Amino acid sequence: MTRLSRALRAVALATSLAGLPALAPSASAADETGAQAPKQYFPLATFRVGAYASSGIPSWAGIIDYLRYLNEVEGGINGVKLFWDECETEWAVEKGVECYERQKGGREGSPVPVFLPHGDPVSKALTEKSVADKIPLLTTGYGRTEAIDGRVFPYSFTVLFSFWSEASSVVNYIAEQVGGKDKLKGVKIATVYHDSPYGKETQVPLDLLAKTYGFENIQIAVPHPGNDQSAQWARIRQIKPDWVFLRGWGVMTPVAIKTAAKTGFPVDRIIGGIWSGSEEDVRPAGSVGKGYLAITPFPAGQDFEITKKIKAAIVDQGKSDLKDLKSFGSVYYNSGLIETIIAVEAIRTAQARFGKRPLNGEETQWGLEHLVLDEARLKQIGADGLVQPLRLSAKDHEGGGAGKVLQWDGAKWTIVSNGWVKSDRELLLPVIYERAAAYAKEKGITPRSDDTAEASAQ
Image (tube, rainbow, N blue to C red):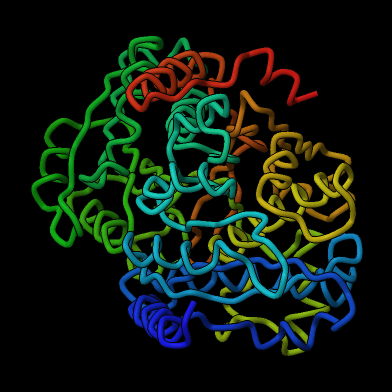
């Protein structure tokens, strides 16, 4: 290669990178990892600006505070310390994909073990890329429901609580309130949903559950962003449902709560979905939000053993990523903490096979498919009650399928369900597997065989 061609190639490379989102390195990376120690890169595709920044900022804080805690208190993961950088996505699909492309090559000799898309649309946009690059996508509480079938989606992990499980757990909680599933017949359940693919995701499982248990399944769409819902709640006043399942996002949730109160619908009969159940969703509604319910795999609170440890070692020492400490222990903060615990435990599981060193995506994928977080392990890491027990396999990339129901008391969330409310996974999984098989046929994918999947899970 001539000197001129090398120069032209360098200019072309610089030009191609110029339009990509900037990477913000962790200021703590150099300080928190010794130069001679092995280091594991942990990329963060964040959204600290834009319409959804209020949910993103506490989520990243939960992630970063746990990584700092691991480095400073536990010496990393089996002696392998973690470092990270941030790439701003503004929760936009194009920028999310660009950040993935910027970060997927790793840093400082460390490969990427796992990628957290933090957005349902971007996770779906990365489905095929992640397979080609052998980098697992970890989506907790969102993502493609069919990706539960790892035989078809080997690198997509809809871990913890899929949207289908969310819908089923809501129905099961309502069943508890009315005296059992046999009492659901004739009960009216109206789903007020964000009119988008995300909002429509629960329509198939709710239709199946309604046919199984005999409740009336009413679907009411709210156009994005949901600033005006007078027509929708006028209809609710007319049809008089017994319960409302609210599947919102952003401004739609507090507007729904306030509009419901104006029309006289009791807020303690509204159950918000995963992304309608944060402090940021109810505080703007003011006093009328008192009594509102929500189901979540991310229970709020500061009294879990791991949050107490993080508070003492990170927050109280002025090392937290939080600027507003009132968000410590919030739903979104704990969501970041929970997904990082899952990612770290998958890396730890994989290290037991591949060695105590920085791991790549293919190795971490093995760790995820062999991840077991039982009560004993959760207690060891101080996450019992915070993280539901999980057991993943090649055939089951969800592993949990339960949530806790919270109620807003006007100032904070209180857990009101009797532990984790489980979904009817036995009923839902056959349909999910059928949809995954249809996707495989459409895309020309040869699924891993059941024998291969079972062997992988051993």
